Image 1 (cartoon, rainbow, N blue to C red):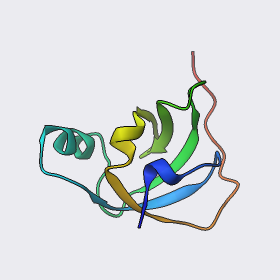
Image 2: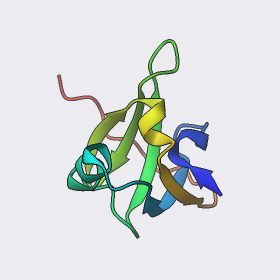
Image 3: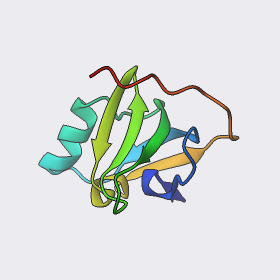
Image 4: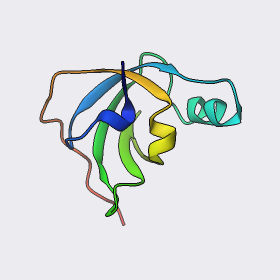
Length: 88
């Protein structure tokens, strides 16, 4: 089984299958929109690879790799989905 931490190419997409655990971190991840059936796209990585930035439910979300490993996903066929520009 794959996790969000296994995504490696910007634009790669996955479908969330399960958030592991029932502790406060798992609850917080689900409150941020990481729920079963939600589609997630990889945006990119910080310079040293952690955190990882994802697009979920129309917003950008950065997760530590340890958090991303708790989210079981089904990898979807690679697409050329566009990533919204940074609005700074």
